[in-house]
Each structure stands twice: as C-alpha cells, then as structure tokens.
Amino acid sequence: MADRRTIGFMLSTTGRKISQYLTVRFQPFDVTSEQFTVLNRLAEQDGISQKELSVRAEKDPTNVTRILDQLERKGLVRREMNPGDRRSFLTYITEAGRSLNEKLTPIETEVIEKVLKDLSEAEIEKFQIILSQINHNIENE
Image (cartoon, rainbow, N blue to C red; front, side, top):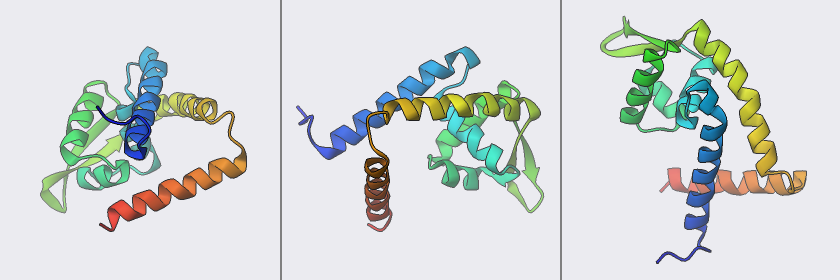
C-alpha cells in the first residue's frame, strides 16, 4: 500500500480531488474539468493545431483529440483542415464555446480560492515556486 504521506501520492490525490470538485461544479454546464482546460486554452488563442493545443493544455495528443470530439459534438469548438499541413487540423472556439468559457472561468477561480482559503499570499507564492521547480525538474529529466 502506498504511503499517503509521499509527495507523489499527495500531489496525485490533490490534483484528482480538485479536478473532481471542478467537474461537479461544471456538471450543470455538461462540461468536465478536462474539457474546460482545452476550451480555456482555445479561448486564449484559437486557430492553433491540435498538437499545439495539446502542448498548451499539457495533455496527451490522443486525449486532446477525444476531448475535441466531445466539445465539437456540443458545438463549442470546430476544426478545419490546416492549409499549411493537410495532415493536421486547426482548432477554433465557437461563440457558444466562448460564452461558456466566460461562465466557467469565474467558477474555476472560485474553486481555487476555496481550496487555497487558509493559505497566506506568501505560502501560495512559495507553493507556486515549488510546483514550478518540480515541473522544471520533470521537463529536464
């Protein structure tokens, strides 16, 4: 049995709990936290390739394709052939997707504020620095 105090276990558990909490809050909008991440990245900049979107969302390209399929069925995104590379698609957020992102973003902000509520600004800043260093270490392995 895994030691519940290990950093890996704690990071995994905490990330999963936050994702589940967001998904519950997004349920009335028929969107998961994973779908929101992809939608939100497209709201920041659309017209990008699925490969670029997977990098920006920090998700596996196969997973992004599956998520885009779901979002496209819901009318929140659309894909077009990439004129520069016929093997790839460019992804765009629709007006419905942009509108939904504007409703979901404050909910995500509220959830993050709730989970960080008893931490000082200095603790949050230090936590962000630590997480950034962990990510840097992983990316440079």
